[in-house]
Amino acid sequence: MATDRRTFLRLSAIGAGAFFLPRGVYAGQEDEHVTSRLKMQQQYETSAPTFNMSGYRAPKIPVVRVGFLGLGDRGGGAVIRFTYIEGVEIKALNDKREAAVKGSQDALKEAGLPAADEYFGEEDSWKAVCERDDIDLIYICSNWAKHTPMALYAMEHGKHVAVEVPAAVTLDEAWQLVEMSEKTKKHCMMLENCCYDFFELLTLNMARQGYFGDLVHAEGAYIHCLMELNFNKPEDDKQYDAGYTDMWRLKQNTRNGNLYPTHGLGPVCQIMNINRGDKMDYLTSMSSADFGMAKKANELAEKDDFYKEFAGKEYRGNMNTSLVKTNKGRTIMIQHDVTSLRPYSRIHMVMGQDNMARKWPYPPKISDGHRWVDEERMKELEEKYTYEIVKKIGDMAKKVGGHGGMDFLMDWRLIDCLRNGLPMDQDVYDAALWSAISPLSEWSVANRSNSVDVPDFTRGNWKNNAPVDLNKMGKDVTGVRDVSKADSDKQLDVH
Image 1 (tube, rainbow, N blue to C red):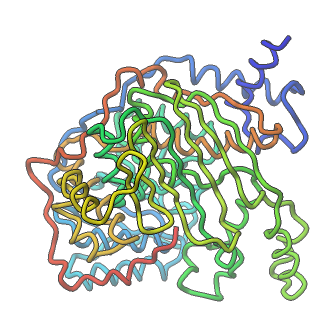
Image 2 (image 1 turned 135 degrees about the horizontal axis):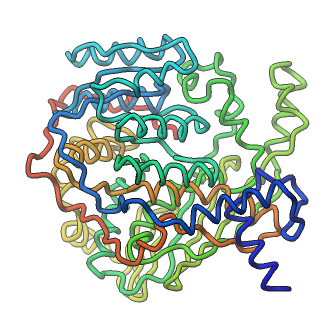
């Protein structure tokens, strides 16, 4: 009986996700809807991969022709960053709002680059961009619900894809991305910029060089108060109008789990070689009660009819903590809190048998045994373990901007890999897995924090997949245009 219940819990976690079941429906209460989904997910996980995208080297693209979908704060900032990268042609700009397209067009003009074709007005005008024959890469910065549909359509039409986080919001979507990438042999890289932050890259190289010893535990988080932004009416502040059009991000907050895991999770997954020598085994998740979201919605609704549709709803718990156990016995903690008045933190803590590192609170620290190193020793470690890519591009990245430069470093690396036929640092299996934490956490929260098995999106290939070496840059190294006049203030550092 216990075995049967555990089997059902495992499969329903893979197939259902909390947002497919009403609150109060627990494992064992099987119904026809859940059963059909379980069968679908069983087919995903037991089928053989059609092609292994991990380590895949796509044919070189000397000049990468790009189409941008979604030109809010993230998309508009990406266009500006791309104007500084050589070996790129920006061919098409798409957004539902004409003003957003015109704004990015102005950025091209200011950079002295040719105008791009414009697509706006219609809800599905983005499809025409994907259908063009003169585009190699589709760069997606739309709202979360459109990430997977756009990525699938782009790959189906022969385009590589770079998609903002999260790449998927359901497990079905995550599997669809995997299958489409394998089928078309087109890259699907999730734009997890925090993997390219400078301390995260330093600790990645330190881990791979054995400084920490056997890795034991890691922690990551997204702790960032977004209460005002989530409830901000689009017309109130044009700076954030693009990011939360139609209040889409606030509407996501009725899901109860870790809705935004990848910023803290991505870097530590790379450090632990998840999908490349180790894999996630199972997860358990717990959320606090909601002490702020519903209260805020109700208070605003009393003063402004605009907010009435958001009043009286049940919102997610303010703090979510999820724990993951890996196949090799390591543990990962991931936290999510965007409502508390708490200083920003992604934690980024790496603990090995010999040494550890942690980034927040500032300044970042690295241990030598059971003591933190002093400033002089820190400089020695930074000199020894800083990647060549940071030494080459880091200063220019800081001038261009985007969360201190990590956004530009990510974009430059993406283009350099495509131009030189190098494997992506993050592939479709990472995009699927890191995104899947959200629905899995929802299921666990809804089931009194019972553990749920994490799908293996590599379908066994994790055992032989090798980590990507970030020190390997293309022989035809991608150039950077003059950044002397770059204005990092033009990059809106809001996730």
